View (cartoon, helix red, strand yellow):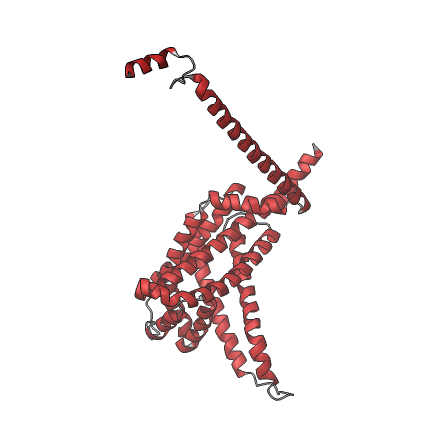
Length: 347
């Protein structure tokens, strides 16, 4: 019976066959048709998006292209990996910088006064780990005012490692414009930066001494000075520190690449990076304060160090993004770009 049924299937031309092209062709045709339709829709969306981007870029006079170029160069340079290296060196160099500052500047103005100024900087720079760093300042910083030349040189070399790493990776943002990394130059720049920081710290100490010696101004309305100080004090401090970060980043973007950097590009990029850094500092501080207990259950006593490194990592990303933005602005609007545009118009 089974043999008879099989013979009928073989001899019956209407019976479907497993390898019969007439049965699979409609399915393949339908699949190919749906794929072509989907691909066509995707191409249409891409074309529409490119048209919208071109229109918006034209309306913004090429400003969107600047951010697109900066983002592409940021990813091509693997800046996130560079930020991780910078944060590592920042943590290793932080404590030698503090010790070097207390010993060197404190030898002239007294260590307690210098430590007080450093505490102000620590609370402004680090939204997390302030208690840890202040405890280090109060307990671990040596109180001796004597320091050998060899110890000073070792502290200076260790403290400059962070600035060498930062300057190297920031300078890489200008490699598309012809900049090249010079190891000896970056080391010299790092040492110079540490010395400049010590000079700035000394100037700050002198300014604080002068201000403390000035007589108190008379108050016309009782309680007015205290109320204004409570309101304007935090705002003024936030703005002053924003200007300080702006100035530091401006100098870094101008000198790190080793080539002449357009001043306007450095001003715009450093100002935007400083503003983003200040805003992210507030957000990160609020986030860390809210989740600190949760992370302490996981990491224990290492929580503070981990959060500090995370903040250093985010800070390095902001600084590197600003550097790539600065290079992109210069490549689009700088003197070199204007010369190329003038030559193209003449031809």
